[in-house]
Image 1 (cartoon, rainbow, N blue to C red):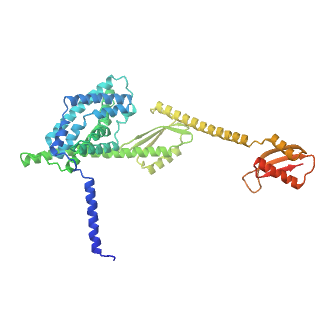
Image 2: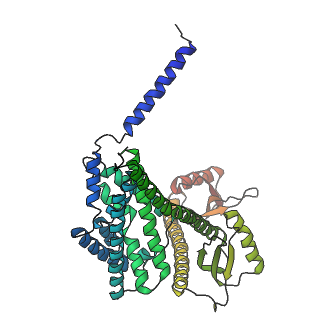
Image 3: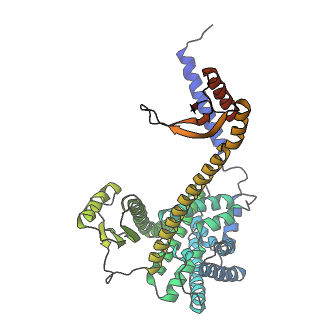
Length: 464
């Protein structure tokens, strides 16, 4: 019996939704194995203070990270991040904001400032005495923050505070967070910038460190509020209100500039990615080569600079390139093409050498590939010719057994083109001269023997 009751269907639908909601809450719940608030605060507070072992560990980690950046060793840099204690005061700031603990915030800021100053001094001293002064790729990567660095720091901070709020600590999360958020390399790069007097390196690296720190603190604050930690109690409501106002004013002072700068980072990242796609798709010239390009982002007017070698690019082609920039979102950017004379431009000799070397390598690889194909074709042709080579002498002797009056004999495989087809056909061409005229039956007998002996379906027999 079919039941078609609308009221019954309406009652079943909410039950299904409730079951799905219950399943999701149980699956994504953070209540399992959650440590009590006092234990979490004590655990984070122990990492805030920089004195004794924490301070010496920081100094050693800075030296290790600076050496890794100096010699361009990723493994050494990762090792330094694993032993770095910089996460403590940064998470302490987020926790203090989350529970309205002004004393914890001030203590965390104080110790973070001490850690930053000591880190800058240590890294600057190292790079001053180091005989290696060339900025390697690992070091240069920390001089210009991107939006992805902020995302990594934020999600790393989420993972860190979730793992830190468990009763049984997840031992593999905190080291992973230390590696992902990468607090140590930027501060060492800032020290490198101070040691060589390059304020651009210092500002970019130090800004990357600040962005990472703010994102980790923000992630800690959000999880603390999500877990419903109790706010710190104060003697009077007036004191509590004053503390809360002070905290939020400080938060706004930090968050508002960070939000604006983060927005500029997003714009810069999008501009650089668009410039990269434009170069890859539109700047493939026949008689000239792009040896270098620089995408300079500016909130007023950005600039894309191309350095070319080879035949000069005509003015019409430059105008055409400029018009194509609109399709890549670069309509507000100015295109600067440097070619011919480089008196006013700084030419990267290493870039030119690398570009020319790549061109030579690609040409050689293509030439070798063509030669290899030719050799393989010739080898296959020779093998095929050897396998298809007819034993003329043996065929003549066998034919003498059948027809003793044979005087001359030869055979060869030949290509025959018909008048209506463009595809050649293979025919076994046989010429024989006998001392007497043969009958049609004898000719047929010779053809059948040739087909069987040479395994050829088509035989063209010429007899004199």
